Image (cartoon, rainbow, N blue to C red; front, side, top):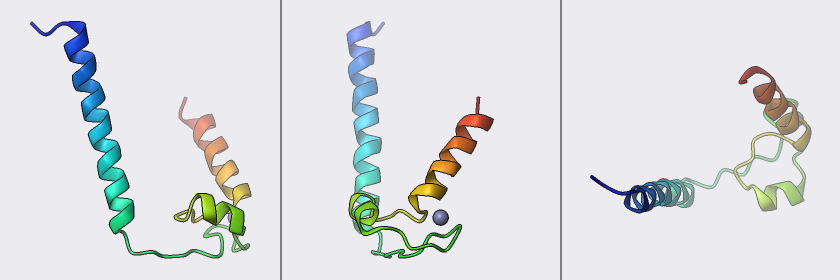
Length: 74
Ligand SMILES: [Zn+2]
């Protein structure tokens, strides 16, 4: 029977693997620079695009989106 430490290390390994896969996908994905928000059409700021190149929503819409998710996914 695996002890807690083994289980924890296995879980950590799996989580790491998922992260690495996600990072690889991001690196392999064609660079699509979204300049305008997909929801409202307003330009996405340079600062935001620098931090999150894959961002498709402006800060306001992202915030709204996350607030709605938090509100409904409880
Ligand atoms: Zn927007």
